Structures are given as C-alpha cells and as structure tokens.
Length: 333
Image 1: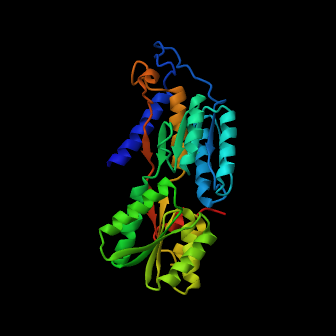
Image 2 (image 1 turned 90 degrees about the vertical axis):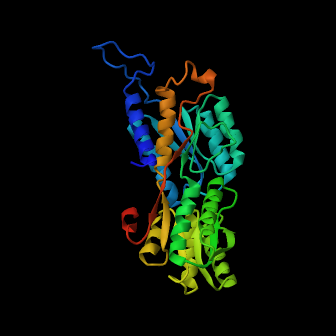
Image 3 (image 1 turned 120 degrees about the horizontal axis):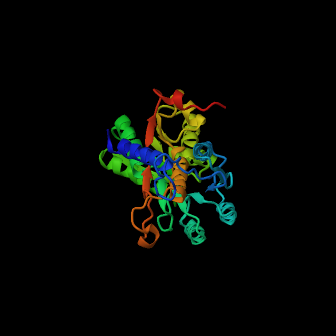
C-alpha cells in the first residue's frame, strides 16, 4: 500500500472510530448506549465562484454528499462567473448565518481578511481547491498542484520528445501557478522542449480560443498546448480545429467537462489531468464536522496549546484521462 492510500485509509478509519464516540470523550459505562448528539441543525457552507462551469458540479456534489453522510445541512453559495465582488458579498452573507463551518475556494489572497473575520467570530474555515496560506484557515483540502502539473508535463514530454509548447492559465491563482511550475519542472527533464509563451485564459473558453489562435499564428511550429485550468482545453481545441491542426498540435487539458472528453474521443485533445474534485468539499466538511463534534484530545487543552487537531493538508490527487478511459468520466446530460 502506498503512502497516499495509507493516509486516506487512516482518515476514513479515524472518522469511523470517532463517529462512534461520545463527543465528551468519556466512554459510556458497560451496558449503557452510546449517547447520540443531534447534529441535524449544523450548517456548513461552501463559498466559491465560477459555479456556472461544469467543473464546479463536483464541488456542489461533494457538499451535498457530505451533508447526507453526516446528517448535517450544507449549502453552496457564490456567483456563476468570476466575480470577486459578488463572491465577497456571498462570503459576508455566509458569515452572517453563523454556520458551524465554512469551506472556501481561495481564488485570491484578498480573501484572507474574510477568512480571518470568520475565525474571529468562532467559525472555523477550511480552504479547498486553491489555498489561502496567509489566512487563519485550519486546513487545506485539494490537489497537489505541482504534482498535477508534473503529471501533465511528463505525459506531454512522452508524446513530444522535443518541440515548442505554450501554457494556458489564469495568472494570480496560487493553485494554477503551482501547476505551471509543475509543467516547468517536467520540461526541465527534457531539454528539447521549450515553453514559448504563457497566456491568460481569464477562465473563459472563448478568451482561451482567441489566445490559442493568436499563438498558433505567432508560433507556426507550435507542437503542443498545456492547460492548467478548466477553460483552456475547450478553447485550445476550438483554435486548433479552426487552424486545421487538430491532432497535429497536441493538447493536454485540465479537468473533466464533457466538452473536453468529447474532444478526447475525437482525437483533438490528447489527454486531460482530472482532479478528484468532489473529494475536496466532502473531506473539508468531514474535517469541520469532526472538529465540532469529535475533537481529538491531542493535548490537555488543544485551544490553549494552539493545536488545531485536524490534518493541515489533504491531497486529493489527480487521474490522467485519455481515449482509453474517458468514457467512464462522461456525465449524463
């Protein structure tokens, strides 16, 4: 058993053991039933944006499944597009509801202040997908982003050997910057591969398509396009088809929306790096739930000892998806 599987199994076993314990930490007397705490009124809220993208379907599903598994209430809030002002408003409204915990996608460091505001009001926060390490969040659950970039980069290097590569991203997001670094590190192992440009998709497939079209004109010998966020793959596919270079310019996409998977089936996109996204909010709620209901007595007083009692980082991993397995990732419309 590898370390990541062992760690995951340990978390599951710990959760199962803890769920059977009295929240007071005192074992019931022999023959006495274990007290059951009513948690049905506890509310856990995820605050995000870009909810209109297929990618965030899994965020919503993870929150819903966590609520059903634990018997608590869950909500997903935030704008359908990339709108920081609207996300801030949703965040403020979520804090005002005094939930038992918040799950936050850390799109930008400017959210640090709101995370700290929630903590000041006694609301624990777990970040998912993109971290806010400068905040007082108690944990981060998400993809090991450099590893995701390494996986995509090594797959692309294996396919190409040599050639010019462009990277499509949304600058300024810590998770995406780490994926870009993963690609850089992978290509450093292959001196024949050159990164000629890194472009901004603005998390919009149409913007990504225009940017990719411009790159194809600027670099006629471009061998591949690597995408580190969800909008890039569809945009790059549109551009290479319009340029008559489908299959000639290799594309590594990110994530699993059906449009990307269809282009893999058609040979336009070579592969995509898929995150196990639903695990992020699912385990984030589990962490918050255990903190509230089954806190482990690591010290005689965790709060005064400044011990969170939760795992600081949980890596949910990635899967490489290509023509051999893409059918299993298609969602029913």
